[in-house]
Image 1 (tube, helix red, strand yellow):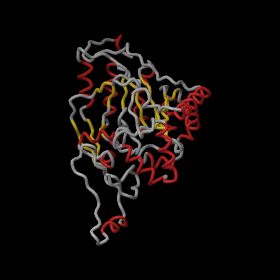
Image 2 (cartoon, helix red, strand yellow):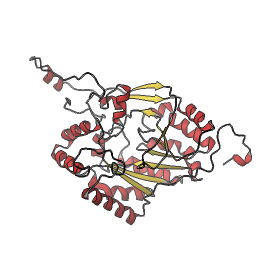
Image 3 (cartoon, rainbow, N blue to C red):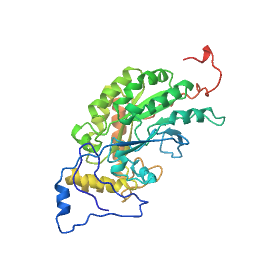
Image 4 (cartoon, rainbow, N blue to C red):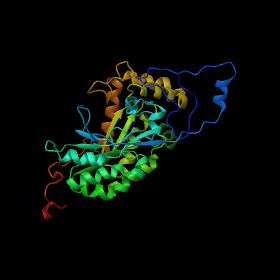
Amino acid sequence: MYAPAGALKGRGTVWAMEHRFSTDTRVDFDDGWGTLQQAADEEQLPPLTQVSKENVNRILSGNDSPDIGFDISINPYRGCEHGCIYCYARPTHSYLNLSPGLDFETRIVAKVNAAERLREAMASKGFTPAQLNIGSVTDAYQPAERRLRITRSILEALSQVRHPFSIITKSSLVERDIDLIAPMAQQRMAAVYVSITTLDSQLARTLEPRAASPARRLQTIRALSQAGIPVGVSVSPVIPFLNEPELERILEAARDAGATSAFSIVLRLPWEVNPLFQQWLQQHVPDKAERIMARLRDMRGGKDYDSSFGTRMTGQGVWAQLLRQRFEKACGSLGLNRQRLTLDLSRFRPPGRATGQGELF
């Protein structure tokens, strides 16, 4: 595949790479008139984000992976404007016949009837409450949420029937919904996990260009914690020689801000994420690129990626073991719980059930 050179401010990649189902492949061709060089010399402007609206048939997704600590999930959007180059969800845009590269962060699909579908699902006779996570694939608080408020409508629906939920995000916008999250958290029905990949603002601007800055995320942890909401930190993904040296400092900063638990996942490079990430390495940290990939292969049985349950989140081998030991030792010394909070499912009341004063919070 041909990967274009250069970078666009505010975008994780400039590469509108073909997806794995593409039948056509395009490459740039020098026609002898200097066209390629002229295109390279011209100033490139970041493409505008396009948000399209979709009415979905269902909004709940089941989880069959033993590596993930929840049973069902809700993702209000497809694609994510944060543009994190490492995002394991990028390949999902292939199913929309869109590029996992530039399209993933500029062509966003909003599931505008999400709350309606959720209420229908919870009202069905066969529905059983379960550990539910919001934003496991793409961030539920990405920029489009400010205007569309889909995530907030989902929280309203869950709060009305007292179905517990957890949220994972790297956006400060989650603070807007403290009024909904805090009352649920007081009854052990809500928790928030904030992802902090690095404390280096310059690295964050290229690694995850439209997410909140590291300092702002720490402020979010503090705001949520002060509101009585259990907050965990996700130090993910861990990238050898890039953000891996910061592991202990990130955990300490999160603890000082109010986080009470932590988890961590080693970088995953499924499908199209692999060439996208390697192109990013050559573009932004060429002096570290070979070492980073070599260490990742050491932790993946010699491969760029291994999707096997049990090791896909942590890696395997000596280096993966040493990384786990560092993480566990740091969490122990900082008093951070390694286990995600188990939420109380017993308070759930299906939509449509008659309510009285005894049903109030």
